[in-house]
Image (cartoon, rainbow, N blue to C red; front, side):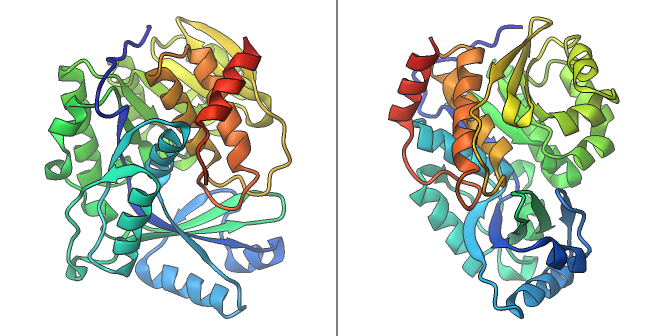
Length: 343
């Protein structure tokens, strides 16, 4: 199925996700083992558990780097860094973390206009991102008030002014946020606006495979992003070739990332590998989010799915070479060169 975008809209994409302040730290594997967190995965934590983890880190005089984050927010920031225009919706509290989040996102070029909740409702969400020497990231996330995002927070007028809607799979972990996402999807479908969706994490796919499968089959998702790990849990196939063959049955446009190899673009029941940009990674945090942002920018600016995947691969290769989950400069001129050199 070919996805059609409307040009000349105020926003390229309207993104919805958990608004989370990322607290990034580099540690060794020995310390990670002491923390008893599953390496390479995201674990949900209570406020008490998160505070204990932060205290453990600070007791070793290790410095935490703070930035606004959340999967979909990182993707929106990438769209902005690529030269596009994005709007983001996520719930924050009226606390120092929330105010930091709001200002930091606006400074990154992403429009953000959501009414914060009083601190009596809880705190702004935080995610401690632990990066080991092999560049793998392990995350502990306290969702805070991000789970209080509701249908009333979805801004229909902004969706209608966007070329695309983008939603993260993490929203399925909570009933309120899931319903908010479903409302946004309904608005987008009624207005013939393509919906992009990321599976987010293997454990999310494990829990909500039936939901995601039905939404894909019903064509509620125009564009789907996943990595091989998520593809494994979704298809229940044992190797890369079988995963790809299984995904070919769907009519959705699927972007299946395969680490340093690049990305498989699966559409019209065919798959094509778009090569990546081999680099030595420092920190893989946000690589998938950045890839999705590059693809979204490409698709909403008239590039083919394969060219858009090339943009996504390039930007992902850039973000893994720096500390943190977001690009730090404008990449619009780089993208023009990348596409020109790939022709």
